[in-house]
Image 1 (cartoon, helix red, strand yellow):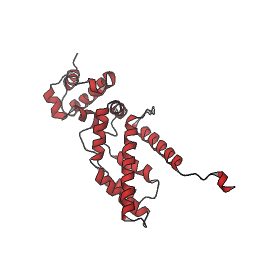
Image 2 (spheres, rainbow, N blue to C red):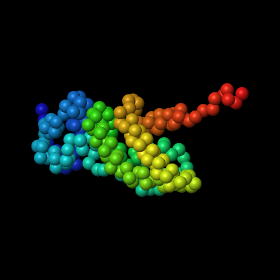
Image 3 (cartoon, rainbow, N blue to C red):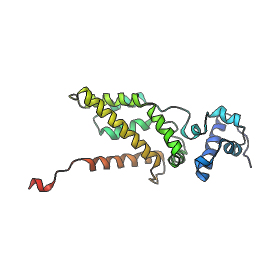
Image 4 (cartoon, rainbow, N blue to C red):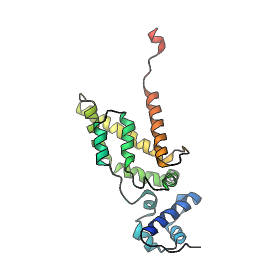
Length: 205
């Protein structure tokens, strides 16, 4: 049975909740716009007045952006580069504070199409991210050559893309999005530690 018709911002929220509920129950790829409309009790015209596509219901309508104050702080920092860069890219992700963000993460991670779309959204700010990372590396390593800065910036960006994919697909049993990110940063820190070349104790003997 259809739920009562709603209006304005409440309609958008009802659409999002219905899409999440149906996707968690059936799988995102098995849910249609028609299914969502029937669940909410609205027409497809009303649906498209709020969201251009079904993907946007889950991913959000706004593009990913980098917060300028956060970017300035990142550039001047001398902390762990990759860990802080990951915080930078996730800080202003759309819907980050949404009460059902965990459900969004589960749905995104369960659909290869949605995950690919999310990666496209990250790619859309690639040049901006690389520029911010370049400024950070130039500040942190004043003696680095232009080529070194360029290469390292691109490497960090691609590692970030992989980290974002991990956040979208990991099963950390976290209670909220911040715990997902804390878990991801911890895993990344562990991997970086394992990647550090350790001197063989026998060589010191």
